[in-house]
Amino acid sequence: MRYTLKQLKYIEVAARHKSISRASQELNISPSSISSAIDAIEQDTNRPLFERLPSKGISPTQFGHTFLSHARQFLKAHRNFEESIMEQSSMVGGGIRMGCFTPAAPIILPLVIQEIAQGHPDILIQFSEGDSQDIYQDLLESNIDLAFGFQLDPPAANLTFIPLFKAPPHIVLPKDHPLARESILSLKDVHELPMILLDLKLTRDYMFGLFTKEGLTPKISYSSKSSEMVRSMVAAGLGYSIFHLRPLKKQQYTVGDLVRIPTTQTYQSVAFGILHREDASLSRADRVMIETCQHLKKTGAFQKVTLPFNTSE
Image (cartoon, rainbow, N blue to C red; front, top):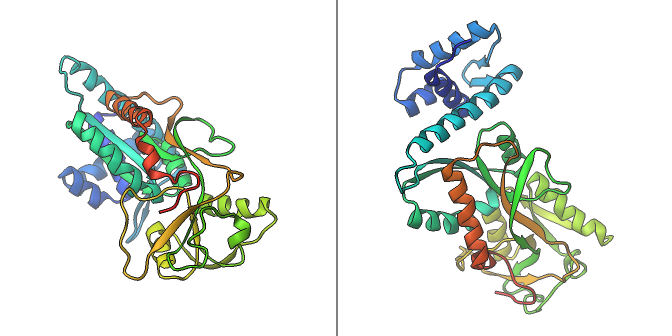
């Protein structure tokens, strides 16, 4: 079996876009060139890499998922090889495919990107956002190199977690709510009030788990998969919610405003950090990302994105 780097790259980009036409646009080549690369490998392996879905693009077969996982590891190794040849340069370059838990992306990424851009302007970062489960699966399938996310309990198999900070839960209320002047709240104080749920799979399970441990049941009145939508609905006076992270700057809302109040220390904090595959071959750019985040941790930069105990906005 003989595959060229060009063929593997074409196939990887097509799989990422789930479309031959969109892949051709990114690579600035004809769709027939990508189709030819796919056909050549399918003929050589005698196995289909993709299912062709009329009007819906392409989707990897089970064999295709396995092939792509190995191909991405190989392409990553090749990028590392090219970087090692350029070691004589003092500038670290290259690309990082970075995943991030969607609600955390607008809070964490600007902090990290700013630091990277100042010290290593030649590093290019391609971001993707998703639910925690999607991010973990993308890591395992080598769709991304690194990811920002929460530590699972129990920890995810075959993934290395590098902790950066712990984030305790805090309660978010409309600014004019009767409880908004409290310095600290418990779930017992709010469980009978209308709750606006951030409706992502692991987030939802975690939230219900908090109430279950207290023998309580939340009154879910609204839900959204967008953390910004949840915050806006709270500001508008439609209910309360629970978050672990807070924006770095005070936000303005179309209707109303909100306050953040810490919970008691009896509630478990969640650990946030960087994840990568245990067997991943980390590039110089990957290592710079990890080292930068560890530096931010040491300087206390991540304390800005959590709510300190017994304070409120």
